[in-house]
Image (cartoon, rainbow, N blue to C red; front, side):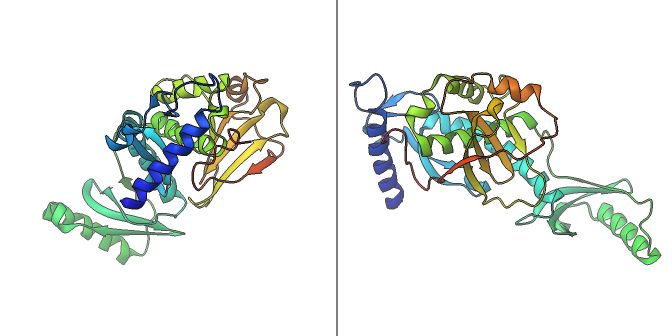
Length: 298
């Protein structure tokens, strides 16, 4: 805890110094929450009005990276983080990359039981939970499984695995947009997020259920480690000059360092589903291990 408090204090000081570099110059020295743009004085650390934000969420392998206000941080945890975790679990299961077992509901031959499931490469491991199931229902399902094993054929057999109910796709996507935005802020600073093109991104983050930005990200197929981290200043495709932030299999697109292309998201929506004829390219910038605010301290 002492180390984290030290990080919060040093991050506050660096953030307040960075905020002094952007207009209006000469405004009171404070730390500006990158999400709501409210200013906070040093005492906000003592009262926990400023909190450490993990990018991406800690449960998805994120590390503490920036400070955000408690209202923005706790609001995201309730609305976005959980949906991101549920969506990521589906991908991990599909590609056989589950780091640990997950609770699920197995339905087969009209019988349903609670189980733990883990998919690793080409295999799926299912473990029953006797204490969480009706003994008679579990017995019937086990008898059906034994019958299939003895017959040596699973042809025509079907089963359903349900991890969650009420999965919401849109908030999960906005959660990755949020993570990409905060990573870009830590790397580039206030001179970047204060650009006019980023206002609509913050509007979308504040209203995750709304389709303010119809298309802003892609999810790459395949076995891509969660630890993959890249920030790319896209340069090859003029129509989509942007800051592309990759976190694992997710890539979000943010407005470029120039304000010359305000139609980025309209162009992405128009071209959604098109087959790209070449890889996007540009300049890689270092992934921040802590707040750097490179543009503010040029």
